Length: 227
Image (cartoon, rainbow, N blue to C red):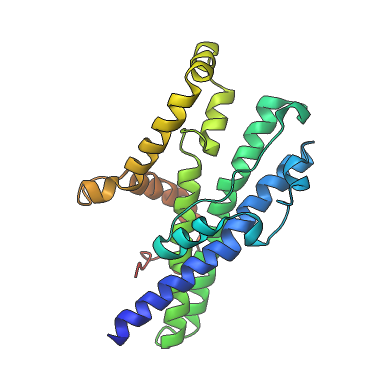
């Protein structure tokens, strides 16, 4: 019973870390990039902030704390204020997922460094477990953000380099696409559970990204411990 309570507490701490530190930083990076490229729309809306309350709503907070994944408020970008729309939209869209990947690297290294101080100390094991769990979640937030599905950042990048016929089709069927995108995302989220762990798009993409990102992890290079 005590072990289960400990596991629950550590999971809650890792989710709180994602909510209060990692997600606000990713949102901040996107708003800061937009500002530097000429669009201050999100900044005027108060989104150039590391206060997690500026980037989430009540329901989003509950979902993240309860399940370990969720969403932030949409960041509005006025593309008419950008000098080079294709380039600038791409850079703005990359800011958030790249921040998540950077946090994965930092959290893995910090967690491994903490544990290396004294691997047998229980409290250090708990700290490392929390940081590794937060790193794992950060990695998948980045992976999800890059999916080419509206309204995710990956779709905005894809759209900038898409062909004219696709753009016309997208505008013509915008409402239907928005609805179906939600169903597709839900299916992707739960694909691992539906297939009883046999296949998951997120696991596949996450493992591919880890092949690259783990080259920058110098502490704790073993398997991530998921509690």
